[in-house]
Length: 332
View 1 (tube, rainbow, N blue to C red):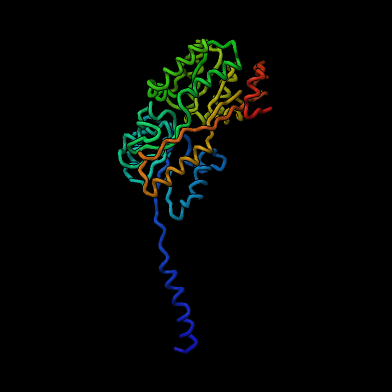
View 2 (cartoon, rainbow, N blue to C red):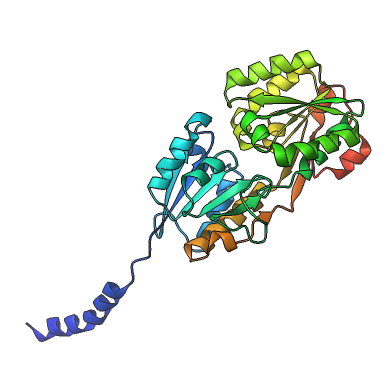
């Protein structure tokens, strides 16, 4: 070997050893399981929940394709298949399962050991946690609001339509019946205080024919207004729901601003971006060794009231000045 080649080799050797010595990032694997919608919706840049979730994970150093593998699943609204889907995901034994309110019972039934990061409402009342501060078990996450939120929604609708005395409540049957112990007593108390009656509009599953059915049936009860719950199963059909509400010529309050953007009258919602960031924080902690039962469940503190003036005018409705003054956003 020539002296020049030997010198170059000696100079390169430490650099080569340095490259070889670089540790390979530990690969973590999480499963995201949504109850409805296409799997592709998880990666939609316009998604107000998942975009902040992934952005926060990246900020914390958990980067898909580098040290994180993300598996995506959807129950596509077929509630009867949720238990099978949950078991299939659990059988793959990811490090964390991220799921929503509707699928959480099936996921929890499928595993008592894999950490679950959940988003929904009233985790104590639904039996997901013993307390917000120390949930225990294998579940933590974000509670968008407590049951008092639904009383506030009734109040807002009553403020917008003071003569309303019969309010229809659109939600999934499984959610209504599954949360009866926590949800219905608070709603009954709120309706008694406001001197209104609540008429359940219960969907067996989130499909167009079911929406057509419940709207046709509730018309016979002649409600004065509608509350569309904030359960995520309803969001993919927001345009259909808004159109059916418009045909009923009734004022309606929705659980998410997407309904107002689709032409709905008003919405009162928790901040989904904040919720996504908080859930990413939980996932990061668990991937770094924390026990989910020791991570406090975050209770959302940011809420927004969005009003649609054009929709109000179409109903011949004028928002009271006090309600306009409370609004975070007014769409002209």
